[in-house]
Length: 93
Image (cartoon, rainbow, N blue to C red; front, side):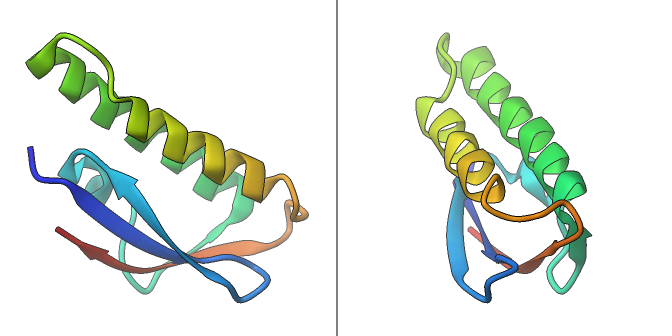
């Protein structure tokens, strides 16, 4: 299960490098695409929960780092209005 990072740009112009323990995020985000904030958070939640589940299947426990990343995304997203957008800049392994 290769660790994967996805870099995003928040509505305030700041960039953040986000962690996933799995490549599953590539099914939910595409570099260069911009997502409405609620959609972005929804996609991140599903992707990171699936990635954590993959860790559980393989190692017998969920991925706390994936869940911590989701917590950071949700907390940061709460600072913006729903009309804003988040852009996926790149996905790397």
